[in-house]
Image 1: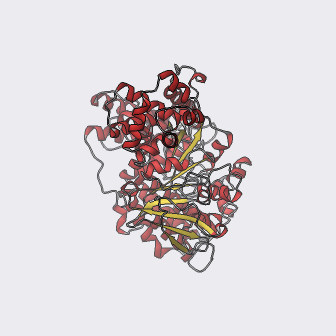
Image 2 (image 1 turned 45 degrees about the horizontal axis):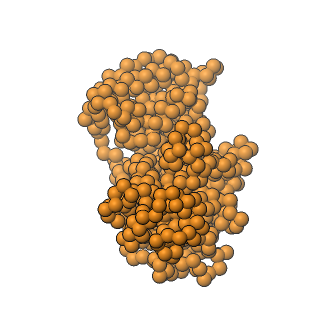
Image 3 (image 1 turned 90 degrees about the vertical axis):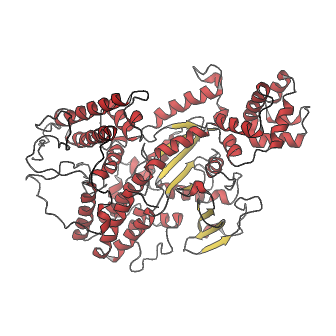
Length: 627
């Protein structure tokens, strides 16, 4: 089900189809097709970081294989279906349907030659997958080069590291096709026409522009390594330079129970607190590549969420409460001690408990039962789920991804359209696509897209800001709740209104008197975001349907003044970022030439300061768009 922004973009694309070449039209059709699918969320990380365990917890079923085997070497897409089934997709587009194994999971042995397999698509009748597709990836750092290349292709990392190391921009690589080798088409299996080159099919550059995940959860343990940060830096959602950032990436510190509490200052001997402190420190290392880092005990979450924990398991734990606390402490020092020492629970049951909960979970469960002996199995399961930290991860996933899925998908689709335009050799076709994008972005309701884009530009370093302003922009775009966006979680409603209005005025002033041209254009977007928050808190809603472009109308190409004359775009981001709009990357609202100062909103009471838009020395820009 498309949201209003996705509907507007789809309408724009549909109207463009008869006006572009057959090759570009094939790319546009794929963009439209992706808009009609749930958000594509990749779960990535190093080998043995617990990715598949986390995937099972997210899905609510033990379907992703967690032991090393054939399936862990393939990209697997878990999506909603009316019938549970597995489809093995080959590089040439062929599909082979398989049933799930007797235990409900993907078979450990597919009985196929993996060399010709692109990926696996698992369809599940799970309501949790109705609005999000979860993509399990092979572990990075694996000795299996083919597995690593599949993951890198999905994440956009293949070929990106070299480009970044040499300072080559992604836009240049796309223009020359150096990154579009065709491996991505086979890795993601976006269609049977991959690499065929037939009339109307996608060329490698175009396919690269519309393939890939749209958001990522990056899983690591203990601490971030250099190559972890590199993969996040290389990740591109739906390509088109959409770098990982607070808009589309979340970090997970998995196996949080393995953090040594005494090694973390301020933890007070608590494993949970040590994990929280470590997660906060790792978030600072990874920002602005991720919105946050959440500590999670994936095994506990999987056991609690998939129904693996039974009443019999609860009773076995209840029996273990009769063991002397000192002796029980010795048992839980190591796995072999727990299974081999004398205890009132038989060895096979203890092995099962160890597989379900590990030593930390067993200790937590027994501690709960010692305090509340009569607690039910269901309540104990809920307490263990709370101890896993998974509830906070679900909340942040909802806040970072689900609530903004429409904006993320629409933004990624526009980026893909801009990349398709850049790949076109027809100047008129490029102009047509850029004009359509610009007109759509001028709608007040589409401001979310401009904010997401500004956030991406700032967080990726394409536009530099002072540290405090960067943090404020990340906070503003990192949530959909006004109290969090304003950094006032406990403030009253009237205080939030006043704060939104004050920040709107400040950013408007900054755009006029304290910013470089690039910073000023971001500042206009931030000003308007605060103004719209203030409007929303007041109860005023922007006018005009967001899907206004869905009626199929596309603007006629408009004449643009050559350099040196009066400019008509106040919101241009003059960065060669290859994002929305023409190759200079601009995507802003228009204002008439000679208007002077920032563009005011209707009924905007925030103070405005007409005057020159000050920029870097010698850049020749003024606030009214003149050079």
